[in-house]
Amino acid sequence: MAFGHELRMAAEEFTAAPGLVLLTAFLLHEGAAGAHCNSFYAPYFHVLPKKLSSLPVCWPDDHWLHSTIKGSHLERQVRAKRHNLGLEFALLKSYVGKLPLTWEDFLWARCIVSSRAYSLQSQRCLVPWADLLNHGTSSEVCVRYGLEGETASDFVMNLGQLVPQGAELLQSYGDKPNATLLLDYGFVLPQAPPAVVSLAFQLPQLLETDPALKEKKVFWTRVSKGRSFRKGELLLEVDEAAEAFLELLRAAVVCGQPQGSSCDLEEKLQDPSVEMEALIRLQHSAQQALGKLCEFEGPEVKEDWEVVSQQNCAQALADERCVLQSLVARAKRES
Image (cartoon, rainbow, N blue to C red; front, side):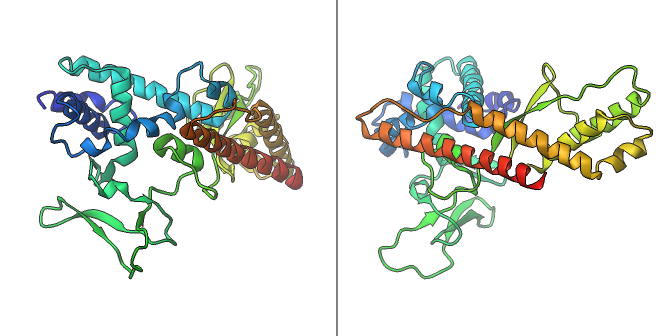
């Protein structure tokens, strides 16, 4: 397409890989030629709308889902994804003036790409029929794939074991928590990697009259890795270990105490009283996040896809609740 190079260059400022935007434009170009054209994705034209409906990022703002996930990390992921999709849509509209581009058309093509595109050697590609394999773990019958051939341009799938006749072949979509699987592919698993949650962190109050103010600012900049705070608070993504969050909490405790030199600040991080105070703050933050989670009570629905969507969102929120409860229990136990 004539606009391909310019679109790729313009897309580099977005968090999504430029290849995703370009492949989306390609599918929209194929669709504009007619659903019955000789497109290799024609078989999917009548399949995706049901899959699209299972993704919370595509539901309208007044849908019951958005009030149900309010305050959760899942809500933050949904909002971030919708924001990025909006930027991509605006970019496409500015470069692809000849295509009848609507928001619904864009979501249709973008969801095909995000749920089916392969990332190989920093490139994105669509491989019809290969992308129909379901997700599996390393302990299941999984194929390996990559680029091979003299020019490393042949997409090849390999299976390194014997498979019984009629057995399903699987491929790994990656070691991802349920919230990511839900947003990218529209499904969740009964047993998935632990969820990531959002915890609020309060910026330590550094007094201008503190004789160690300069040393504390240098110390805090190093520990916080230059993170920016808005209105004295930062929402951090925290996994089950919460090590990065605890490191910030320890540093905040140390900065709040009267100190001498910068060496004292470093040594103080190992003080048992600092660790105890950090754990107490972790417990408080996790309990606050738990209090924001709503009980999942979606309305009674009849369509199969919406029943499945309710169950999937409920599972993603349950995973968050489990991680937060685990952090509260750990903080109580260790403090």
